Image (cartoon, rainbow, N blue to C red):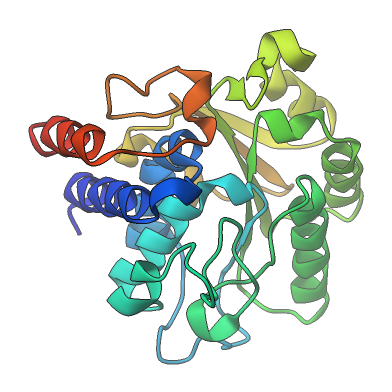
Length: 267
């Protein structure tokens, strides 16, 4: 699969969903920073079967960073877990597809997002269960850098190292912005790579918008839990969104949508 092209398709899909949901708005910036992560996971790394979504030997992706649903739903749609009708219903009355995903294995969704920090603990529990059962699958958890303010992240990290979960990998979307502003000003995370190393992880730092670099990092195996710090840009791909905190959650007008599509399509 051409991962760069796949990522472009996901970015265009995410923008359409953001525009179509109208005045409800969506987590546009957070979704766009995660596009290449989702493209690489679903296009090259994860072991899954759309026809057997509850297969015990599937890899599990736990999306703790619930604000990335535009990228997440777009990826699930492109690989066949969600229909075009499903994502067209995003943020409409009666829809099952909200601003935070709800667990539904039929749709490939492993975890109900919402309260940040909880997904990594859930993922560690999954990894421990899979290891005890002797399964060969891997468990991935996607978290945000702002989410790393939560104590639950570090309790889960200690547990992963304590139980030697070599089948577990946490991916940090390091876009350096959260709802209230730059992560360094809200609650300085300092050096996240050194932190995860200190908590017993094998750590890699990768360009979060380079699918080839991400693929290499995400496929790595070690004798301990693993962490990939994906260096990203919030709102990536759209000039008026990149690095602008207001696009954490925002409405996208038709005019803005058309400009954004032109920028993404011409890359």
